[in-house]
Image (cartoon, each protein chain N blue to C red):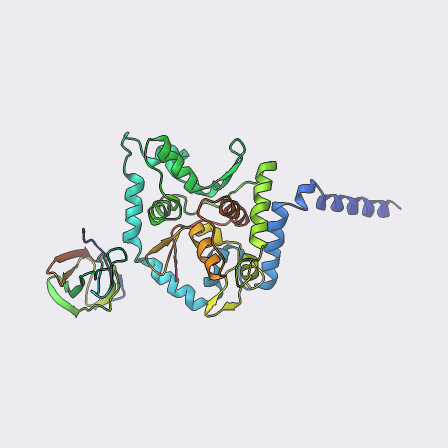
Amino acid sequence: MKRILTYIMAGLLLGCAHTGPSADRTGPAADRRALIDYYKQTLPGIKFDDYIYGALAMNPDAMNQYDSFMEFPSYSIDLDKGQKAWETPFKNGRKFSSCFPNGGRNVAGNYPYFDDAANRVVTFENAINACLKANGEEELKYGESEMGLLTAYARSLSDGMEVNVKVEGAGALAAYEKGKAYYATRNGQLNFSCKSCHVQSAGKFIRSDQLSMMIGQASHWPEFRGGTDIVTLQGRFKQCEKNVRAKPKSANSEEYNNLEYYLTYMSNDLPMQTPVFRK
Amino acid sequence: MAETMKMRATMEGDVVDVKVLIQHPMDTGLMKDAKTEKLIPAHFINQVVATLNGKTVLDAQWGVGIAKNPFIGFRIKGAKPGDKVGVNAVDNLGTKFDGEVVVA
């Protein structure tokens, strides 16, 4: 009798360990765990930490070529322009490093975040422009190469930091859900959603390119695509929308900011590296 | 436009692996400026000479097929740490630029 009671108690305790706050069973944390489990099943040969390499992790030859390219990337001259932009003082004598904690080191993983007071998602690029504005300088255009090169260098100061996006509070959750809905919505003449390729077809080929999994994507932007062209994450959204023959939104639009928020959250706990090379 | 050259030379066994990145527009002369619709004049590196401690080890003639900001990698046998590897490039306008690196 005592043994049966012990078993019942143990069962109840274990059952309680699975329940807990209801936010655990639905909501961002649950979404992320579910997607990780999905990729573990559909792409079993790839370790979680290698998701940051996307399609490169699916092809050892591509990975070798990437490694040898990264030994001395041909974009390093362009990246120097970004470094110069970051280190050059404003007219008032201050620098970008004064706008961020720790001089800008190990901060990029906290972006985007939801600003409750402003009721909007704030991206790293928004923070850069806020810094420029606060110091009486002209803001940079979103998604263009000047912003791209500057953030390519600025974000490299956070290399190795794990993505650490928080979704806390009603406003943040609403923005996250909007980003998630946009991700799953079919679009364009070809009628694909982001999910069609990067979740349902991750690992499969589209023409000659292998499709990367969604988790890990947001950890390495902006990136140099095709060698020396800097592309920001939202710049890539535009390219993907054009690929499905949809009319792209503009960089820093509410849709793209919410989408960036959702995608970056889903890459939480993965180490960042900026910039990187993709073909 | 400031031409810059980045170089790396590391030993691999008894061979030095040299990697050079040169900043140069490498315009072919066949492309048109999007705004003015005029041809952008040809401006490309047409000769690259590499030396080991002053002695020529590589002499290359380049053409318009080589892309912007060219990268060249080559290996030299018989080099040792402390040796100097020099790269001298000339472009079709006669501009010269050189770089030098000490083998690591």
